[in-house]
Amino acid sequence: MRLPILELRSVTHVFANGIYGLRNVNLSIASGSFVVLAGANGSGKTILMRHLNGLAKATTGSVLLDGVNILENLAETRRRVGLVFQDPDSQLLRETVARDVAFGPENLRLKRAEINRRVADALAATGLVGFDRRRPHSLSGGEKRRLAVAGVLAMYPDVLVLDEPFTGLDWRGSARLIEVLLKLHAAGKTILLITHDLDKMLAHANRLVLMEAGKITADGRPEKLISKVENHGVRRPPGTILSMTWAT
Image 1 (cartoon, rainbow, N blue to C red):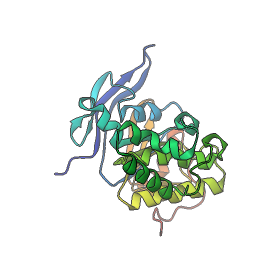
Image 2 (cartoon, helix red, strand yellow; image 1 turned 135 degrees about the vertical axis):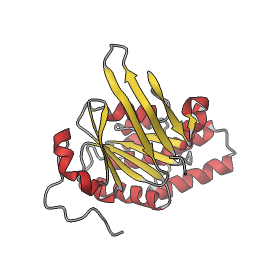
Image 3 (cartoon, helix red, strand yellow; image 1 turned 90 degrees about the vertical axis):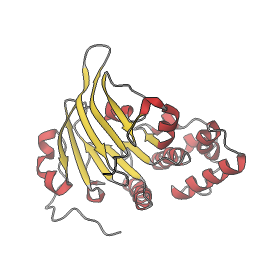
């Protein structure tokens, strides 16, 4: 039986003030899957995300990458599991777009030719060709989010985790980001999208996980769980939902 690419085993996280962020969470994510993780604000989505590459450490329990505890090799985990945070400005570190995307590969001490190739590939994948010399903080909100994705892609991750990626975006910016994510998934990337807004991406997902009060309370096919989302403080997409498939 094939191991999941990512797995949380009985993960509990207690903050320094004694408040529980996660309570005995068990979650496995198959390679190549597209998972939407939803829940109301404060349900535990973001702290769960931070456990996936060791930015937060479990009070009890463990996180595995291909069956190996991520704490055994955090550098490799952080290369393979890329996180894109809700605020893209927190991930924009350099003075130009190209240099920002090169930041991760440079830290891997790759040869310059390989770094340049990765930067070019990441910019092409995210629709940012020609933006090389632009200043990151001069970009639009949607462009900044795509740049944050590009910076992660340049590390050649296997898993891409995004926290509320559509916050503050207009429809044009959202549509461009959706296009990027669908292409990445079609190319074989495992995607975990964390949100409390199901309108934009649920039709593309093959799995929906619902959280409440630090626990996973439902997990399954989106079409099976859509009637339960409002019980978890998540707005149900409007209209009559006849299917959960999307032609691309």
